[in-house]
Image 1 (cartoon, one colour):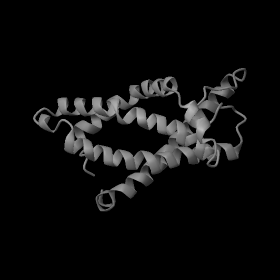
Image 2 (cartoon, helix red, strand yellow; image 1 turned 90 degrees about the vertical axis):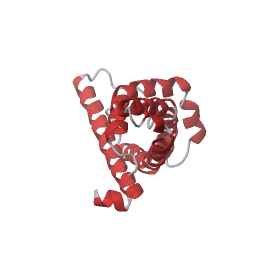
Image 3 (tube, helix red, strand yellow; image 1 turned 120 degrees about the vertical axis):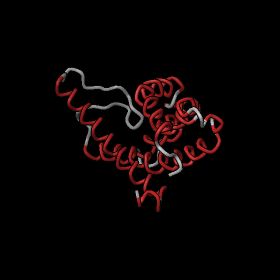
Image 4 (spheres, helix red, strand yellow; image 1 turned 90 degrees about the horizontal axis):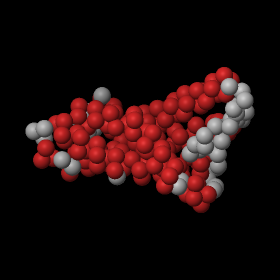
Length: 175
């Protein structure tokens, strides 16, 4: 808490980078476990950092993918959410302070309709570009189709909408 109060943005950036790296490692280990259980199916659903996830993915490629997700979390996700949460606390549903549940619901609706799709699109562009060493920007943008962004947003909403309700309801956003 002391570090968060003293340096909120750097603390959030470092924490988010570590969490995104751990999340990618966990997700990738799950994909590899699935491949071991069902060796006939080696190709995986395309993700934002690779065109196919296969059990034979090389160590360097896995590290580049992990760095891409980690850097997205630490350099894009954390800073933009830091400022977005502060904006939301100061400007969205401030007249509903007497009804914290309705205030949280309103903020989640605004967050889900504005920040979330932009964040998903940014992830679909950022991760392949970083994993490729800075190249392929136009290809990454063309692969970030509205359909892929919408599917990813919808799948993520299963987890993120309840999580955001908790954050907007009980966590002070000003940190």
